[in-house]
Image (cartoon, rainbow, N blue to C red; front, side, top):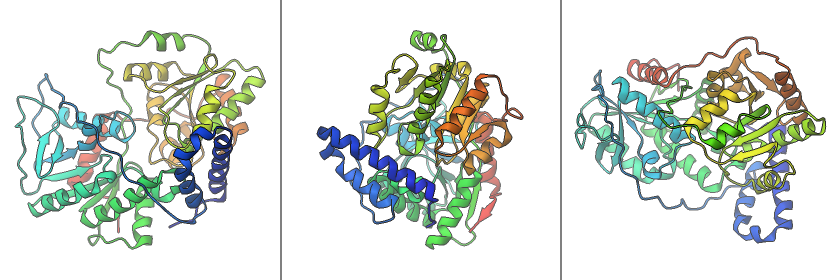
Length: 437
């Protein structure tokens, strides 16, 4: 496994120290989080690894109905897009958001069928008069696994093996390798489960797909470096994600309309966790506010893991509720409205597989300010602004630039979810994978 840059290691250690100080001052939080801290410290410094058990599943919701006409699959063999985990757990952000968008585009275009795996049974995700209640596997069918599945490896491996034995082929999606490359910012269960899943999935896969070139090269290097078992000349390809919204008839909330109508605001979209670097963004805004810059900071995203000190900093900030705003969840209509009204999007992560908010914001016309890391350079090129990683002063200057009207060299080209799905379909069906291992 590659060594992390000193700057990233130091950031993880500093983040951990901040969390420990917070716990010392708030001891009622300590007992429930001591194991997380051991994990973070040992992996940020390369000393060890531990894990804990996966939490139980929710009762799955009803399958959604499609009232409109849908196209039958336009090509054979059929491409089946697994959405089982997103359906079962009812999650609509992060990877499940991507899977749902691609699944909807697949069924609308006739390029594929989103499916739920129930043991050896395959059920269409959408209920529709044109779909049978159960699909029978045909020789040549392609099962694409893009969902958040690594905590369910024990359930998936037998299904994958059976699918291959019945003449199907497996394409395994890897959104990122963050739990393996940056284990200090993932909880123990995720790292352990992800490693086990990846090793088993690579051994069974007929091909691998990622959502960026950067992740594809990381994946190839990891497979080679760890000497993972795989089929000869295993193809690895990449495609990019869509950026358009389908908010339907859902109205913008009165709260979002009010928040977006006041003074200029800068937006961050994403879960609050260590690698998203919200503390760096807060440092930048504290500087701007000390200098009397008229700007607000809006955070959209749920609280994630091991960032209690950051959450406390937000909630106890003197500007919270005035110039510092936090919405833990919003509708697509509200998110689209925020993107369109924002002075800029800030994305400060030190590790991403793609960075969906970057293309969503750009698609809506918002300037993007991102940390200077390879995947953002790949996705954004010279169409977005960059700041020095972990440097609040550098970020503050980029925000000043945007507020006075500075523009990037060119607009960022984005694609729709239908175009993204078409790219995935072409990649899988043509087997035109850009790399092999």
